[in-house]
Length: 320
Image (tube, rainbow, N blue to C red; front, side, top):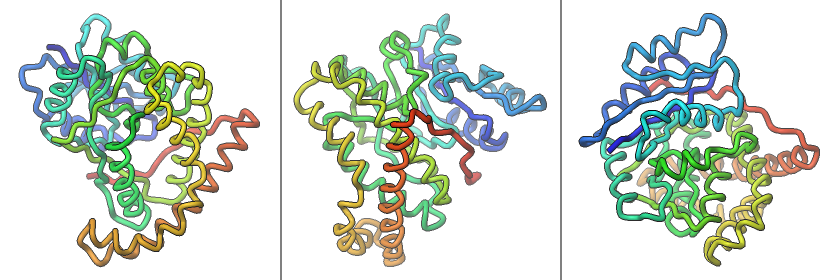
């Protein structure tokens, strides 16, 4: 069985972050899979030494002089690079992804037991809860993980997980979509495909550590969500449960300010979940977060109406 591990790398990621990523991903369990690692690195200038560092660490590199299609374009270029390899499965990660050791094996096992599933992945957890911003996102992920288990329209951020190569390589990612992951998930669900949540492993990722980075990230997500309305006709072919979850995701998430009264319960829920009284301070972060999300949603809507795409930018990382 052949498996490809694909990691798109923006110009903003450091050499050390890439090195840590390669070391971690190569340490996972892969059973007897024939594995190929492909890092797609977008150039940050003439003196970019990151591709050579990655090659020395034993991975294949697709080096891009431009950023055509951003993350979606990088993944599509990786798929073209893999055309001769012909993988059965493709695992997609970001440079900050830290899956548990059994992540690949458990996800492949889940896909083997579900012919209609296009992706298998796990709940998300934050690896860098170092300040109020990242601790707030850590608490938010508690809700996201709950919804992942309940929703019929299941989208894994970044398509981070293990995908059936047949579906991914046939369809490819939409390079005009700001949220290429949600775009692909919508197209798959419209065709009757499913996403399976694996409960026997976990994956950790970094949260933004500044309110500015968090705002920019969520504005992109909101803008990408608005683009998904183009698929409303195709989604008529999906089941009633999938359509209901899809419409809820594209409407209720745009009015987070309505949920502010529920923050009265957050101190009790935070202590109960994290078992730390110090987490009560995250209530303030959740309040700021709700207001920031509402502002990001409004700004994304104005940008969408004016046909002004949001920009991708650097995000501060913590070297783990």
